[in-house]
Length: 241
Image (cartoon, rainbow, N blue to C red; front, side, top):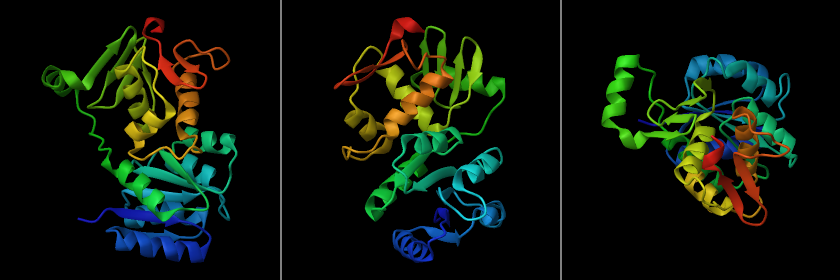
């Protein structure tokens, strides 16, 4: 069965080119050209993934993302012509799972789409089911001090409080915890989380680190839990949890 993609992009020539390219690579694609029609098109097509341009007429991509994130459980990939890190951070904060910068390289876009669609989220289960899964899937649980991660349900508890992360943020945190007290380069984190080689420009990992620190109560001005080692990479400090 083909995965369905909804592409919302006001540049009609780009929409046509991307739609044709994605069709040729096995996806069923529906299109729209305005932020205002996104919610209705989601209801009509029930796509697995939404590709959403940041700058749209009627309602911009950030506003659309904020409006639909509570009701739309699929993946959201933002297209942006902005090289401003704050725009990219804002998109991730609004619930986007990833972003691709313009001008778009079709093969890069395809790689990002395939990576997002490989992340399978399991539905919530009751506590009894959780307990059974825990006993059988120890490899899917991780405990570090007051931080607890369940890979099966993508639930994170910090000091017994639920932390809401996007699937891509969870993936990054899982990797950092699995390699606690080890320096992980940006190149390695990009490869592990997105399945592509680092291009020397992409700042997705950096932006997600900023969001993780914020959500995990780590002082962004002087982080202690997830620290940056200049010129080397990132390190999750096990003793700070």
